[in-house]
Length: 434
Ligand code: FES
Ligand SMILES: [Fe+2]
Image (cartoon, rainbow, N blue to C red; front, side, top):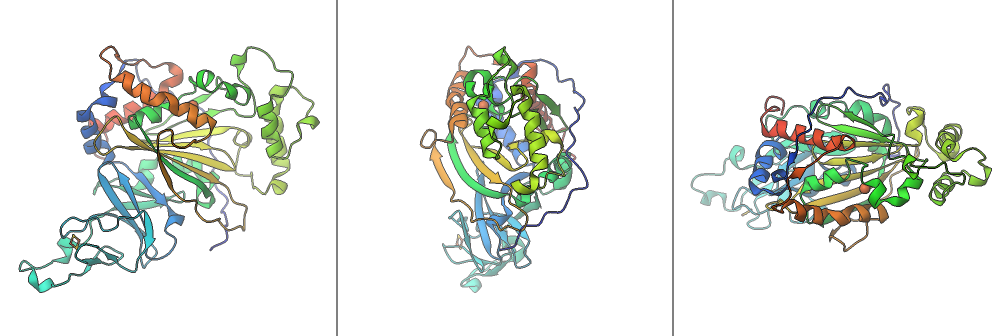
């Protein structure tokens, strides 16, 4: 294992408001959520053209380590080569089409298909065919080696793009590296890795985390720990974010609190602040947390010097088009990855991965086991359980004859922005850069 070292960033996460694009106010067609034809278009023009997260780099630390992952109908094999480079292949043997690996992860010296033992090197080259002389047409390596897919690494993740003519990963990510490198996701340790099968379209889930309009309704407790009104929304080229003040309370409560609510008390205690020592107004706690963390960073084991004050208290919430949602804090990150079902627009896979920042010099703990469950078989914690309750019902409602489409408010405009990017792909607007 390698001890963690972090390089200080030359850039800091910009906090300023981005200019607002004019996106109109039309209804968003519900067919994008329920139609099999639209699902096929999405695959052909979007999923097979964009950069997607495959796995964490630390899932394949050694030569020969591999993981398999699914996107839509495709299974992909991600392998660490002899040269330590991670490569991504279609997980299919070019003999009779068996999947080269069936398990989620493992380590192999070579990649041998279990059916007739065709054998591929870790770089995908076909190296052994039993009874090769029996193939009268020959077994040309250039035709029969594993088909490699464009791949790259950023932020501790291995990314892939099914498009052979993909734009460079960094171009696709746009502003994200500049915004997020100060968080050093690459040195964070994964503490939870759960996949849930949900009965809704993948966008139904993305939408649920792209607005705070629902917080007052389904997360009433959060009104006592976050401000769901003074939320800055920034819409960039393909991706977007909102900045949500935490360690405070919601103006929707309609009154000034004169006692520290229990939820906030617990959050203070977690960072070593005793609520009894705090004598200011409750709406001054957020600022006090920022000052406390800055002054006590050594005791807390973090270096906050790359962060602005708001990043020490707030949720910098990013949506990486098309399917990554991140709740980002100075010391932790919660990532949701929404994946489409292979054939059914009414189903999806919801991956939850939690990460915590590691102190300088520490080693990452072992990876958590990956769990996969059907909806409701496992709790994801109060807030995510609350979020997931509505989703199958939204999906069902959308298929009703009576439902017209998505009627979007301004505070929900990240949803409209996501649809604009999606439709740019569907209409070929990104054809030259992806
Ligand atoms: S299908 Fe792979 S060796 Fe035959
Ligand atoms: Fe929510």
